[in-house]
Length: 479
Image 1 (cartoon, rainbow, N blue to C red):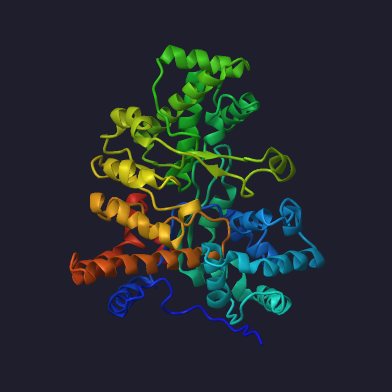
Image 2: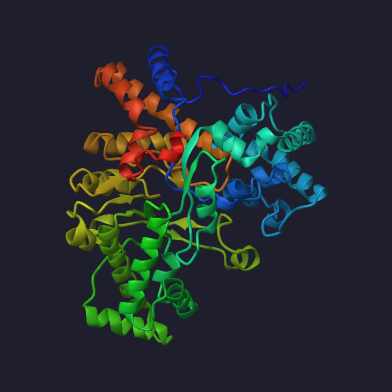
């Protein structure tokens, strides 16, 4: 007879060695209840502004989470059956998607997705059952009933999770009205800030480049028919975001190239792009120049520049046509930081107002390139593992790969990078357990004093990302 009872172990992710585990427990206790600072993510700010309950468990756990969807799709499940691209699901469709997750739940064994979801099942919804086809309907019903209660609405969970800062990801032409409304709402105690994400406006080869740049100019009130006007529009919109609470800009291109062009060449290639006659190589050259200009603007306005390069987006053309972007078909490629960011760092890397955080999914880059760069340039920080490598073993490898070169103060703090709202505390808790485990090992090996380890775990979750992203301590968070 099967035993369907399940409660996550209190020592999960802590070392197996009893002596080291005891140290890790102490270190984890010092940080587990610290506030959550989330300086990069993809939660829609309207979720918190409207504060409407989630319609069903599928809308909460499955449809928005490409981590979940991509593995089921690899096993032959149609994304449409998971609600992707379908809009609000009726009861039958929602329950069908949930049963599919239960049917394939065994395939998630050992994955961070399963770890996060089981954390949420137990810590947020109080469930003590493993998901499988036998338990699926009862678990669905219990979650669905709880989602109707006031304490499970988005704002209540935001407070319950201990989130003090949540950054969203926003289009440069967005008017940021939801952020303005949240900032003015005296009943909301958190801080939700926008992030300037100009990627598509820096891709001159796009078929819609003219429409995009026109929209940018309209939002900025600037004529963008010339490159100088385009650059001014970018400056204006970045300042608009900063004035509405933004602390960073986010950039994700095929490579992090920042090679400068002569001004006259940049103006000529921009005109070619606007005329629809720019070649592929020239488009890459102009995009790299534009990214370098974003760094110069960052040195002016103080927005922290985060760079997430080297992902081939929408690998399947058929899936993109059916479901659009961000459904799990983005595949990592190799990245070269040393040569690609050298022009940028020679340009503004020693400017005290410039700051950049470098991320990678190519783990070999962490110790070979990012750690040495962040270990010498005062403007460079090593970004935490994200996307495909925000997993327990990879996070431990990250600490081991970079800490010997740059310690802990040159790292970004944990980045959850999620659209799945309820996974935020699960991901941050995972990071804290792993930091406790990593530091406990150093203490046990007499490579680190316990006093130093205690100090580190009290600064890494909250203070470190605040310092890196220039967040300070907002008055609204302390009301």
